Amino acid sequence: MAATAVGPNFECVGSQMFPHTEHHQEQNGVKIGGGQRSFHQDSEAPYMLPNDSAEHVRLERQCRVLSAIMNHKIPHAPLDLNKTQRLLDIGCGTGYVTKTLADKFPNAQVYGVDLTPVPQIREYPPNVRFLQGNIVTQSPAEWKPLDGSASLTEHENVFDLCFERLCVNTVPDAPGFLKREYHLLKPGGWIEMHEIGRPTVLRDGSKATGIDVLEGMESTYTEKTGAVMRPGDVAADWMRDVGFVNVQAHEYLWPIDIAGASAELRAELSDITDGTLARDQVDVVTSIITRMNMKGLLDDEAAGVMVENTREFYLSADVQKYYRFIVTIGQKPE
Image (cartoon, one colour):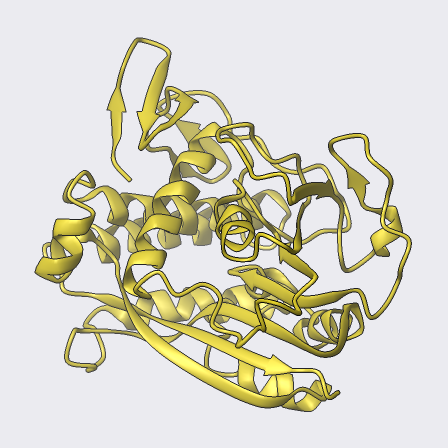
């Protein structure tokens, strides 16, 4: 979602207003070209991306792109409109998907939970509630309602849907994370995971050139953190191992930059300029490398090389590169 400047201190992204930001560049823990990024303060949470206004802008843009490539099909889980009562958006970020779910299920209560408070950038229907908490280390009763309302009281069998996008890739014990969701779901409830698979591909499905260096960085990430950076291909196996049934996967092509997208997608997202999405990806991967460096998981030299390799891969002239974006759903037995 391209940002259009509307003043010296603010920018407009779609219909949402954010403090003005620029694409950040970091190397070896140092922010180049502006102030330092801010991050969540939960010492028990492994999530490495920022929580500042620049990140909110990126997340909104990302949500628009992902919704478009899926033909706005959210959720994929076959929920009964008349029987669905509670839905949970895990790691809800800016609340984009939370609102989407609330609009599609107006008679259900939709909860968005995140490590940090959700930014106030849009109006929400009355069936939305936001909570601050960690689903891995806390029970629902410990999640803090941001509107001052009463906390949830149930610990298990609470939700008809547990939705997560690009969160499991930060969790060292991903099967344990899914087991937690299994217990949060009612019998017959659904889990839905949106994650990236390997490798990065061209439009015809062949492996993109230059990806070996990036995959080497991802292997280092897994070795150092225990998390799988692109778990889309293994999500179905994890679900079955935990006990989910009726597991299905749906795959989409996520363009690394709008310049390489289809004509239809470019037309729908015409306000996103060439190079914007690629720079977003540089910001994401560089933030992860920087955080690993700050935590002592990478030395300065290794971090610097990874940053340069990241920039070279994403900002190269070859724009016809895509992530394999995999949506996996599974059902808790009745």
